[in-house]
Amino acid sequence: MQLIKIAFIIILLISSISAQCFHHPNNIYASLEIVECNWNSGLDVTDTSSHQEASEEMFQVQFNCEIGDKVTCDKVLGQFKKAANMITSTFIFNTPIKVNVSYYDFCTVYPANLCGDLSGAAYPSQFYALQDDDGLTRLYPQSLVKQFKFSNAPKYNEFDINAEFNSVSNFWFEQDSIKINPDQEDIYWTICHELIHGLGFYNRWMGYQINPIALIPTTALINPDGSVPRNNLFNTNSSFVEFMMDKYTILLSNGTQISLFTRQLNTFFNDHKSSVFNDVFIKSPQFKFAQELLVLATTPNSLGLLPRNSRNFLSDAFILETSMPTFEQGTSLIHVDFKTYINTNDFLMTYRSVDGNNAKQMVLNGGNYSGGPIGPRLKLMMETFGYATAENPNPYKPLPFKPSPTPDVTSKSNETINHNASSGCTLYIIKKN
Ligand SMILES: *[C@@H]1O[C@H](CO)[C@@H](O)[C@H](O)[C@H]1NC(C)=O
Ligand SMILES: *[C@@H]1O[C@H](CO)[C@@H](O)[C@H](O)[C@H]1NC(C)=O
Ligand SMILES: *[C@@H]1O[C@H](CO)[C@@H](O)[C@H](O)[C@H]1NC(C)=O
Ligand SMILES: *[C@@H]1O[C@H](CO)[C@@H](O)[C@H](O)[C@H]1NC(C)=O
Ligand SMILES: *[C@@H]1O[C@H](CO)[C@@H](O)[C@H](O)[C@H]1NC(C)=O
Ligand SMILES: *[C@@H]1O[C@H](CO)[C@@H](O)[C@H](O)[C@H]1NC(C)=O
Ligand SMILES: [Zn+2]
Image (cartoon, rainbow, N blue to C red; front, side):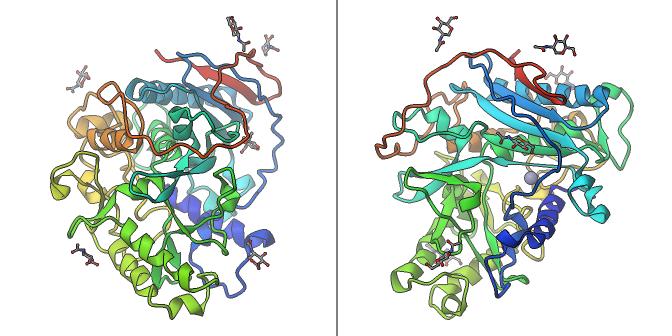
């Protein structure tokens, strides 16, 4: 089972080895699995930081191919180009998206008994706290914040998205022109799926305690300039914070926003100066909201994403994955319902593909949708989040950053491309077709 969720479970193991990630003496959290430590791949990749920005070069991939097999590296890159073309033909970016991709043997980093089951992972490199039109502050991924072109934006990370793919995973490559095996996964599906997470189809609900007795939003430390590096997530001293996607997450029973629960949970901090990771929280009146959230997150068809301008929350909602009997971070809630969508044109964001089916077959199976793997509901949700498309050129925009002394980084610069600055690390500019 080459499931993405395995990636997160492994990170739990890695986390438990790293002392810096253990700021919780009581070991009461179930959520360590996606607390990422600064684990080291053990491979030296020289920085090729020069880049080029131009209007038709809106999706840039730095590809660190850390295996000796150049033929395979080229195939992986070919699939990235295909995915980048697909994404840039669906969404209109005004500022280039930059992705730092590594393709390497996960067994050099992860435990030997599990590394073969991993396929890949991607996530926004940094978030920014922006105020939404409902008064709540939520964490937006850098890739989208850049598109808003705020005049007082903080300094951005070099890359918007970090991604890694496992060279020992049993991937199928279209270029091989051979039939996909029943135990193989189409790397194109994996890349497209992961890049959508990287663009912000992302949330971070956490089980409370190892065998979860409740579910809570992430706690995060917001820097004074509004930035939230990944190391600031799961800060035990902070209050709860939502991600962009949570704004649109509703209860399918009555259409209530899940944010109502977050608001209630955060009233805990009006009464207490303490962290939520102790008995004070469990005994507080707010705790029942966290318990209710766990029930929702483990009851099929109970939560969904509601796109903008929808008239009927039942028929319009994009149902989220809540069918796992126990809450699984990295699988539950961050994907759409497998049963409902795997055989439709919105199969891309289910938590896994069907082994032995390549992306093309899945598109055909879903009715040969003209948009390819980005189905109509997914596209509508990405538009709702704030990504522009030809059909929706002026999407929603949260309020800008408060003025800060940092310079505007949206100004264009053009530098030369630094080809093969080091072995195995070249900056590729992927042009839109
Ligand atoms: C890009 O990814 C590689 C491999 O994961 C990592 O070592 C490197 O620090 C990343 N670069 C940046 C600028 O984040
Ligand atoms: C939380 O606050 C305590 C007391 O102020 C401090 O000692 C600790 O380092 C803080 N922990 C984090 C993760 O910021
Ligand atoms: C919606 O359902 C939830 C869960 O059952 C409940 O807590 C909430 O009060 C309901 N909201 C409304 C407006 O009925
Ligand atoms: C699927 O759609 C494409 C155009 O988007 C078309 O070229 C192709 O023939 C269709 N395939 C099938 C089996 O209908
Ligand atoms: C970028 O290139 C254009 C055309 O080559 C040039 O006019 C412009 O001054 C350059 N901008 C910067 C910031 O170097
Ligand atoms: C990159 O490598 C290729 C072949 O390995 C070589 O022909 C080319 O000159 C190199 N480019 C630069 C900028 O060093
Ligand atoms: Zn996923």
